[in-house]
Length: 223
Image 1 (tube, rainbow, N blue to C red):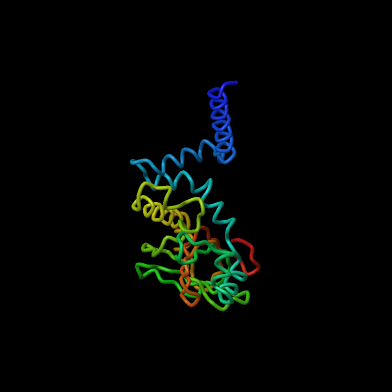
Image 2 (cartoon, rainbow, N blue to C red):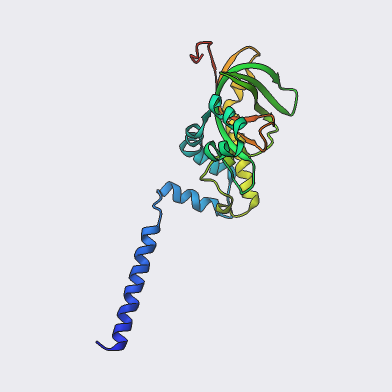
């Protein structure tokens, strides 16, 4: 074999090896996931349409799966915030606040529908001394739902506005689905909920954006 033929053969082998390595490193995605990825980078991106498409199939199941019981989460945060964040939370950006998804049950102790940042305060019990404030809106501060979802990242979107719009759309979608239950609550009633919150420091009040909530009897049976 000539030197030229040997070089060509070597080049061909190198290309084939590189191609094999590339294929081995690829992540196989479904048609729906591919469509979602393409939609996020479209110039005609609609955050509302995107969230509508992923809410039931991806977002809500992921949030429910990631939810840590309040009786375990809050003592862990109080004991060691960084360790609790690493084990039970998520940071959407380096150095940002920890975001947690929490599930809990407790008694409604106060309701504020007069404020623009409306809340329903719930005393958790089960050895958890703190209360949480379930946000009812219409103003919601923060993007806890977006920040809690690992498959939503800033770099996946065309620009910062699209990323921000997704956070807003997730919050709007979640609150629309729990609005009637939240508005019907009264002090003294017992509720079970799942929601997300951002926490920069352990001593801060906990404002939870709820994704599900239901009234329960004293024995824990849903009403």
